Image 1 (cartoon, one colour):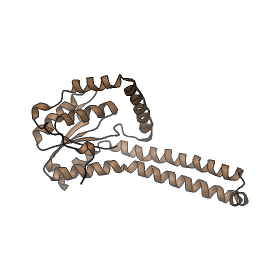
Image 2 (image 1 turned 45 degrees about the horizontal axis):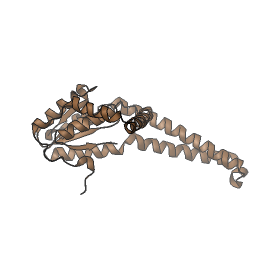
Image 3 (image 1 turned 135 degrees about the vertical axis):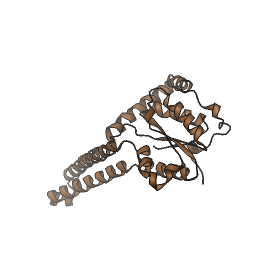
Amino acid sequence: MARSPDRVLQPGLNDLGSVANPAANSRKIVMAEKSPFGIAVLIRRTAVEYLLKGLFGEKSLTKVVGLFPDKGKADAAAASVRKAPGMVAGQARVLGPQDANLSRREFFGRTMEPEQRGIFKTLLISHGITGLAGAIAGLLLFAWLYRSGQPMVASSPLLAFIAIVGFAITFGLLLGGLIALRPDHVWLIAAVRSALKESRWAVIVHPLDASQTDAAKGILRDSGAEILKSL
């Protein structure tokens, strides 16, 4: 099965001494962001981040995972990630083959999705915002059809209003449910569990912004990991 670019194992970087220097990775990111193109990309990513943070209740919206063949390399990479600028100890955790067992599923779940309260807030916020957006879209559609003299709307405006706005709100709530489910997280969790069952080790990183995401990916890749990432 073809793998995405992020999942390609980097050749020749499996030696434990090749764990990246977090400061070096940070300098590379800063230099890239100083170019005009880098500044434009940074502005766009920052705007998207603010929009997403308004829609989700979790502080960490992205998960970065590095898969390793043994515990030593996983622990070393996790320690390097924790030393990256702005990172704290709880943002990088290590899972081993024993954590794929059903008896450890609660620990596995807390490691992959530590923000349980944030997930509940996401359910409320996403449904509230998308439901409201659906209601507004329905109102605008009804107003346009009514003003244009559409026969079915003009003959029964109340029924048309209830039907159009009701369906719009329903579709908005369905979209909110899809957002809250986070299909990308479901895929990532399944992939990590499969890797653990193959006796591999995983470093789970919960970055808070795009800079931490880039830093984590760079450190894990330079450590010889196979990289997985949610949207």
